[in-house]
Image 1 (cartoon, rainbow, N blue to C red):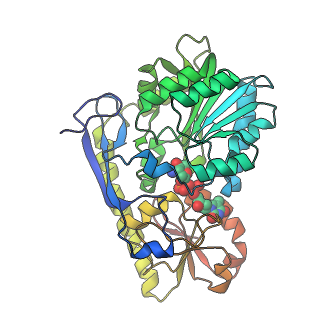
Image 2 (image 1 turned 180 degrees about the horizontal axis):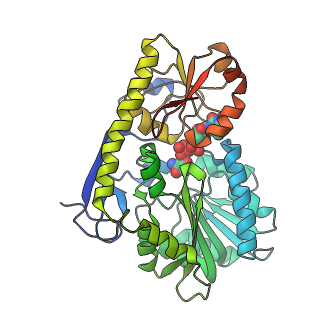
Image 3 (image 1 turned 60 degrees about the vertical axis):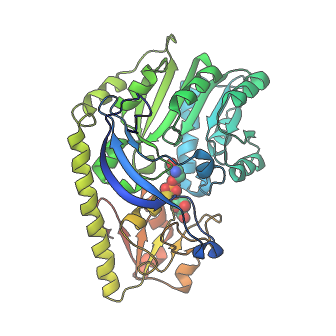
Length: 407
Ligand code: DWN
């Protein structure tokens, strides 16, 4: 049966990139799991010529992906600052105060909502991962441990009324049933309320070759053009868009219910104009796929060359995207001795698919490498600052994409 677009139901999807069968990005392994058979799933990307949406062809169930989750928003200072700034600007722009309700969908450890609480805003998190919902509750962020569904919406409205603002950061690409999600958001949101999403920006991925952000959690790869189509077909409208630096470049889109008299900002038409002829043309994606294979060979060859010179290699950051990068570029523990990660949830585990040990930063002193591959390249500045003493001792750092650069 021909696969259909998850948004517009068109069945003429065009497959343009296959990264091979890949383990789930956040399915880190314990030592005892290493000898068990590891599940891998196709990682193929296609383009819908009708609604211009780039999407995965093979979908893994959200229960498998999100009920136990090791990514914690607060691990990086960069993100703590990012969400503090987001709470401040939304409080101002949406005129939030003590009578306002902010609901965050996919609230993780409650980082954004904690920042909203500084302004007296009432907050509720919706987080499917039980381990993260527990951390959020310990941070005094009321959290419903579930996916956003009709029952959760009904429970929030009955206890707190409708929401003035609903946020969904790095979530809107993770939900296959977007129409169902928007139905629930519209029920939850006041008629003059605002829905704010932050999503990795497709055009940044195309320009920066950051194909490692392609993994099973990310079902959709959004342009503003495709987002505009989605909201207009769900009784909502994007009224403002901002280009923000998170995760290598993201879009922050502000959405209202149709009928709300919030003015539409010129940023929307400006962005849509810039995307015309790029995101709506299959040639763009076929060229991208060719460049992905070139990027793979360049990174693979540079790692192999250093290893061939007898150099010791380590890596910094065990982000979900590292699973795609390492698996696709065939870089495993034969090439990288260990990966440092500051998240205690990941230390002592092994990377999905490539089985590289994830350790605490102390290992850098115990077994100082010659080179460190920065897998969390979106936090390169923060990581380089905290590893200055190793750079002063002669350790060199490699930024992997768009092509390997040694600094
Ligand atoms: O959509 C998603 C994106 C937005 O965030 C989710 N699928 C999960 C997550 O993806 P990710 O794991 O690629 O995100 P990060 O934030 O790029 O991961 C950074 C990794 O680097 C974390 O494991 C923490 C680590 N890190 C560290 O060890 N020391 C990061 C910094 C800044 C540090 O100083």
